[in-house]
Image (cartoon, rainbow, N blue to C red; front, side, top):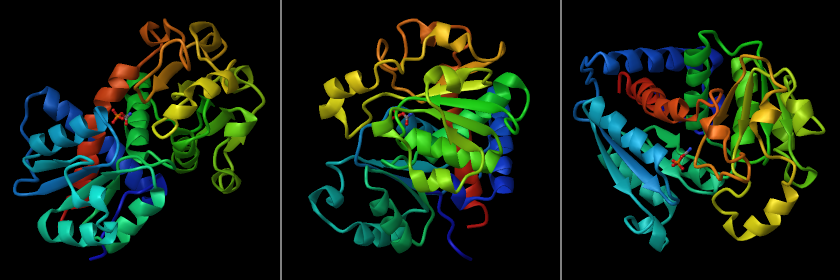
Amino acid sequence: MQTRHFLTLRDFSPEELRQILNRGAELKRLQAAGTAWTPLQGKTLAMVFGLSSTRTRVAFETGMHQLGGHAINLGPADSQIGRGEPVEDTARVLSEMVDVVMIRTLSHDEVTAFARASSVPVINGMTARFHPCQLLADMQTYEEVQGRTIEGRTVAFVGDGYNMCNSYINAARQFRFRLRIAAPESHQPDGDLLADTDNAELVESPKAAVENADLVVTDVWSSMGHDEEAAERRNVFDGYQVSPSLLDLANQDAIFMHCLPAHRGEEVSEDLLDDPRSVVYTEAGNRLHSQKALLEFLLADR
Ligand code: CP
């Protein structure tokens, strides 16, 4: 049996992604009802974190616990990767001991190399290029809050054309929605991804992106790896803040998402996360349920 990995949304078919979204919603209902579901008894997830995390780590660790399995956290100082052991060697060693690996590091190539050497499923817990786990939660959240699928809807991404924006381009293709992106010229998303996706386009301003949108999304102006550029980036992204008044241009029932952590006063106004249209905490909570569905999918029949 071929080992499946989840490094980008394009590793799975639209039908498989749909199955995971539906399952995430079902697992959320089971958990809320207090119904134990423990198919991963005896299974172990290794989480390799080269970068900080709150949501990703807690969702995977809690998810493995609720599914009857176990998770091991390997922070930057906890594994030999930090001391230069090749990722391929680490992948082969972990494959001998655990059933699934999640890895978060800036280099997407490193995650790809890790997966190539791994005989157990590898999950991308975020790289500089993609954050596919976040998109599972975002799509589940849209459908849960709005009671309809995102297919055919219009999504506005405002801000840095970085890993979240790239992931939204992939999501537009896989979940069949229209994506309008407003990003400064110096911080545009991956051109190859855009060229390969019919339903994503760059627009000239945040207003043009948000007008009549069903979902508005942003991310921090200085993601992990860009901390030293924070002051310069505040100038570059001036005018790209999402606020309640910008959101007023969207459709009347539009909602707002942010993968968090957020910087109030920068990419979001001080009051936006408390606006009734913001669903960021439900979105964060759905990291748990969607990642449980992902783990179940990857470990089924193994
Ligand atoms: N959104 C997200 O991935 O959060 P963490 O960095 O806290 O994991």
